[in-house]
Image (cartoon, rainbow, N blue to C red):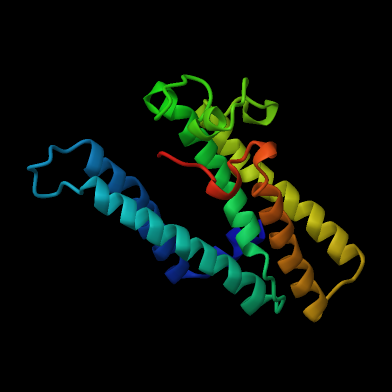
Length: 192
């Protein structure tokens, strides 16, 4: 509601969002629908590079909103950003199936290497794209809500909030680096 009232008076914002939406729809279409010899064809490599640029731009906008607009220095954006990326990585690992190095149709290669016998419960559902997209949004959003609620309810501000957000990133990194948790340990997700 507030967002729509702001955009009503912001012609530049409307134009920018319209162009961004058009590009987000047009680029994949030009890659998938046109043959490779067509002059408007966009290669998969270019689509990948543009996706990376847009991803980093999204992170920059998030940092700018929190630090530049609100004045809250958060050193923990990487944690939420990485959790969403990791959820999509889990989906991609499930899509490899038996084409992996070890040829297991269910377990990702690092789980076969570490002698896992079955897929952990938290990997269930990541073979479906719709589930992965929901988890990409839900997991980081839920963690951000819980962390934000605890931090701001305790009225933690300034340098102390920055240190707490950095500690959150470090704690998540230590948890993900453990092989027995089923996230790939120090190697992460391999063999894409």
